Image (cartoon, rainbow, N blue to C red; front, side, top):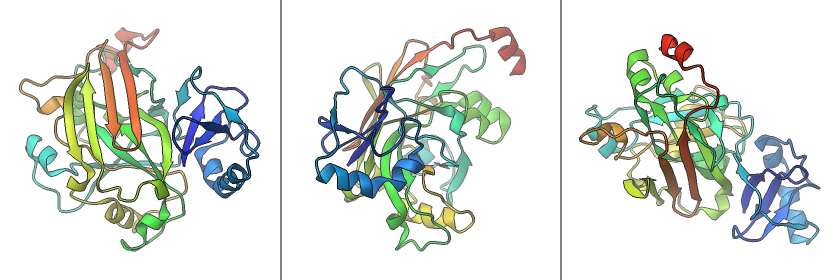
Length: 293
């Protein structure tokens, strides 16, 4: 099942089996429901869909919004693909590198990536498989970890590389507003038999930049959930971005960072694609932002 959030005022959430015929969830969850609320209502959604009680809704004339709403945590994994480690000139990490993106960075699957050239000159893309937690996970074994996954979606871990390296830590540089496009919907875990066998790609203005398989992760999804849950409680609605493969703009020769006007498409096999235009933020006080740098 696919769970999407739309711009329709009275039927914001919708469900589909094929991405073509959608059923409104207006009678099941409120338009302003969080992802946690939708997760809690999943069995009722399945029951009502099976019973034919949900009305169909046309999404062709509406915008899809980020299906991740008010998560308590967005946890990210750095350097989790061997070829990306090599292109970054780093040593292979013995354990997962964990950092955070803050929820205010979230934007929709077709929303703009706002790039202020006075703030960053090194805006980069990173396609990632995102995991949505469905059950509370605390000290779970690797063998049981995937039982705690609600579903999967596509994410772009947009990064300001100049700030990333200047700060010495990664959270701020990866949490600017609009630096976490996600979507186009959540595909529930039962529809993804093997999350470690999915192709990921990024194109910039139609040119292929990243192309890899989730099977190339150094630390797989089950291990990541096990590892993270040893020290913190993973709650329903939490998101784990599982790392990006080789081909980021920073590593190209010469480096090729995103520019205003670029169109970035990140795709994960079977989960859909997100397409985001790079724009200048409306009303940005570039003088103030330049001083803040």
